[in-house]
Structure formats: C-alpha cells, structure tokens
Length: 329
Ligand SMILES: NC(=O)c1ccc[n+]([C@@H]2O[C@H](COP(=O)([O-])OP(=O)(O)OC[C@H]3O[C@@H](n4cnc5c(N)ncnc54)[C@H](OP(=O)(O)O)[C@@H]3O)[C@@H](O)[C@H]2O)c1
Image 1 (cartoon, rainbow, N blue to C red):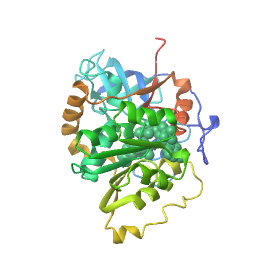
Image 2: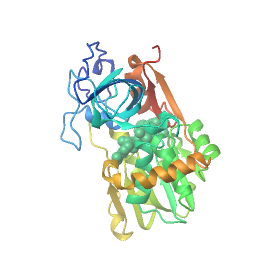
Image 3: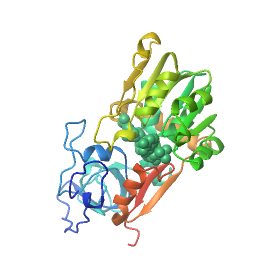
C-alpha cells in the first residue's frame, strides 16, 4: 500500500514492488501463491483507525486470503507440492510460519472454493443465518448484496435450511436474473430501479422475518421498515458506506425496533469458528449433491489485483472475486 485512501482508493493507493524473496528459516515454508481473494473488509484496513483488526501499513504489502503451493519447506508438517490456504495474499510468493498454513485437499473440491463458498465467505453466510439470526423453517429472509460471494451463499443456504420465502437485492438486471433463474430466489430486485423500501414491500408483501445485511444505509432502513414482529437482522457488512467520507443518513426508523421487538446484531465470522465443522459438512454435502451452486469472477496477475479489488467494490463481480497469480510460471 503506497498511501492511505481518502474516499475511494485510486491507482496511487497501490504500488507494485519487486523484492528479494528470503529463504525459509527453520519452521517456515515458502509458498507460491496461485489464487488470492479481494474482499470488502480490505477497504476498512486501509484506514488508520481502531478496529477488530490492525490497519494495513503504508509501504508494506497488503494481506488477505490466498492459496498456493509449497515450493520450499523447513517444517516436517509440509512437503513441497502441498496446497495450502493462508493469510498472505497480495504477493506472488509468501513466506509463512508452518502453523499459519491450513491444508487444502485439491481432490475434495476445486481449490478456489476454499476462498469462497466452502471458505470464509460461505461460513459468514452460514454463521449469520444459523448462529446470529437463528433462522427458523418457514420464515421469510431478505439478503442485500445477494449476487456477491456472501449474499449468493445466504440465499441458497436459507432455502436449504427451510426458509419459506427468499428475497434478494443486487445492482443489475443480469444479477437479478441470476438470483431468480439460477439460485432459486423467490423474488429479487435491482436497487437502482426505485426506492428499496417500495421494491422490498412488493417482493415480500407479508414482511420479512430475517434480514441479512451486506449493504447498510437505505437497505437497512427499508429492511427495518418491512420487518415482522420479533424479526432479526444479522448485520454482516455495510458496503454502501465503506468509501464514504461522511456518516450515512439512514437508517432513520430505529424507533420501530421497540414496538416490533426487533433485534439487530452485528457479527464477525471469526467469532463463529465453532460452526466451521458443521458448515463444511453441510455445505460440502450440498455442493457434492448439486443442491448448491456458486460463481466466481476472475482477474489475472498481481498487477491487476488493485483493479480487481476496485471492480468488486463497484459491483463488477458475480459471486466471489478472485485473482489468479503466477499464471505465467
Ligand atoms: N462480518 C463478517 O465477518 C464479514 C465477513 C465477510 C464479508 N462481510 C461483509 O459482507 C458483505 C459482502 O462481502 P462479499 O465478500 O460477499 O463481497 P461481494 O458481495 O462479493 O462484493 C461486494 C458487492 O457489494 C455490492 N455493492 C457495492 N456498493 C454497493 C452499494 N452502494 N449498495 C449496494 N450494494 C453495493 C456490489 O454488488 P452490486 O452489483 O449488487 O451493487 C459488489 O459486488 C460486505 O459488506 C462485507 O464487508 C462481513
């Protein structure tokens, strides 16, 4: 990261640096990265503010989920050729302590799924529905950012967990078609087509019981306005405000929480590691059985990682946004 952004990141926020790759010391491995993830939370880490995770440092490589192959090992745990998941993306080669890598089985599922539907974003969707909102069969679920990595998993998991009606919002007609025609959403709308509150009332005339919030702002206000008594919102993200320099005006209807006895609960996927085992088992089973599908949007090469990140923040992705690395080796 070359400079901290104020508002939207620009080309000046990033710099591609070439440095010597050190040889691994005892207990370390050298990994050639093949895939890296770009995620909305990375925008938050570009700010120098107190948060649940330390900010990125100016002049140092950014970090994030990545998958690669061990090319040198000085640990008995790892052999050359092993495929690993780890947290040092945004670079072609990563030098890791052996216990900072997690084994990935390329025979079990495509390795990219460990950064998406079977990985962090999939677990986020599952934890929000099961651990936070405590979805019950028959309930109506609304998810914003529904064609993205987390949102597309939320809609499908909700259906598989017995939701009565699943409604989603996304940013284009193509995404809306993807939700209804491919993922089995009962209704979906493009939030550019009119006020979210009005479109949501039309899509869920009997109200919603669970709101999975990826967007915040106008979406959250609309969801609160459509919630049935004792409704619950899993507050996962508020991407509509991540590049704002002024706080959002909405939601303005928080008083409704009282009369309707609503619960809004923020959560972080990292606090739901206890659900990982059951999540991997269920989602892996749904995927293998053809009941769950996923899409990925790829960019190629580290040079294009900043553009891929910005493209994802602007809605250029369907499903998980990933960058393929070391593709020319
Ligand atoms: N709490 C946690 O532990 C946790 C973990 C992972 C992710 N998250 C959060 O979950 C959300 C989704 O993350 P993801 O990784 O799955 O990303 P994603 O949905 O795959 O990509 C981001 C999407 O946000 C949408 N977006 C951008 N600006 C918007 C706006 N102003 N209004 C409405 N939608 C907008 C875009 O789709 P459109 O074309 O539809 O606009 C874009 O595709 C983010 O808020 C993220 O911070 C939270």
